[in-house]
Length: 498
Ligand SMILES: Cc1cc2nc3c(=O)[nH]c(=O)nc-3n(C[C@H](O)[C@H](O)[C@H](O)COP(=O)(O)OP(=O)(O)OC[C@H]3O[C@@H](n4cnc5c(N)ncnc54)[C@H](O)[C@@H]3O)c2cc1C
Image (cartoon, rainbow, N blue to C red; front, side, top):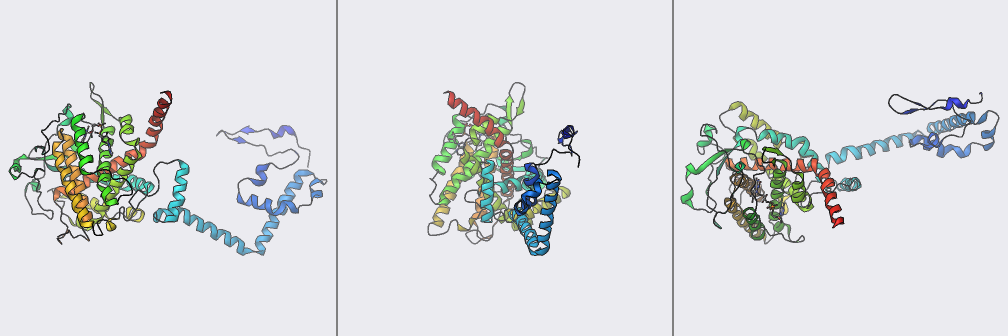
């Protein structure tokens, strides 16, 4: 071989911006990457062979390059020999590779609760710096799975379902007296008020009572005064026209209600206390987070020009800054999701008739898809395990205590001083109550031994609540990390200044 012309060593740039190296080389001492780049085989060659090439050969007459090529050939042929001699080794390696691939790709996707893989995954996630990873507390599903399944399956389905007539008309008694204190709430925005449906808008069939598989709705004012239960006070509201969003309802009135809920009806038991006691607090806190998230995502950013948009600092200040509130949101979502899947047989058979055959058939089909979703069942078969709750000697007593507290919380919704907040407050509290009722039931039996039964309004509330929570989870998952980076930094740098 001719001596190498150094000018031919020059590198050129390829059109994609990478560097293309000339083939010619200087007399050879092989570059590190040529002998041991990260390819497994090259390392194998190096390991097996380099020692066995006699040193004199390297320095012999044909020069280093030939030496290297020769050495490489030798290494290869040696390896090939070894392969020929021992084919089991190759098969063993291929087998190991397949098992590894199976373990990394298939098992975690299909058996997300396999503890070994959860551990591997949580290690991986903590390396990625994710704040929420591992199993959602007291639940049977991890954060990553919830995010994935919500984004791919649940949210798109729920988003369609709630638009169908059956789910978009909610029957509500918006004006009841507050049973605890004189009404004090005043909402300053026009957006506080609810636009009620005209008589001819909501499905005729809803007006007729119990000719359906759902029993007729029996809505009384929560303070339980029968004289207040006059049907003309009932209102049908089109939820699609009255979205949950910022209303300007704030100050002492709103604060008083949250305080009453937390301090009197679902105190925050220290962790370590029996988890039945903490459940109600976590459910309400998760719901509170979701309400705050909806305020933040649909906010009146400029009152003068009536411009609506996102308020990310509010999202951070009220929810993201407190990881416990985010965790409670995931908990509440899984709790409600479990109640929906537990009641799957009932909900699948339910009558979604609104007098519009095409839309009603679609509602039924989508509900079936939601209830029997294969990916959900594979990834998170039992989002929450209620089997161990309310057991033991104090079980029945605890259950009654929660029911009592929950009735009080429902009654407090009549004290919410803003119509639209009251509408969504009542709907979501009814949804939570329905979820509890389903999970209190054993094998579809309510406690008196009666078969589980749901009113139409309860089904509407349950599914709309699940949709609200699903939307909040989606938003936190998509926006959370960047909002935390921006606002978390601002806070820590202002902490440093002060
Ligand atoms: C039932 C209900 C429905 C409402 N719906 C709407 C609505 O649709 N649109 C609207 O604009 N306003 C709504 N509001 C008002 C809204 O929730 C706030 O009360 C209001 O915006 C004032 O917020 P704040 O900053 O004072 O904190 P608030 O949200 O009122 O919180 C009060 C206190 O509760 C604690 N807290 C806050 N979040 C959590 C949590 N996730 N878990 C545990 N503790 C928590 C904190 O100590 C906080 O200081 C509603 C209020 C109620 C009671």
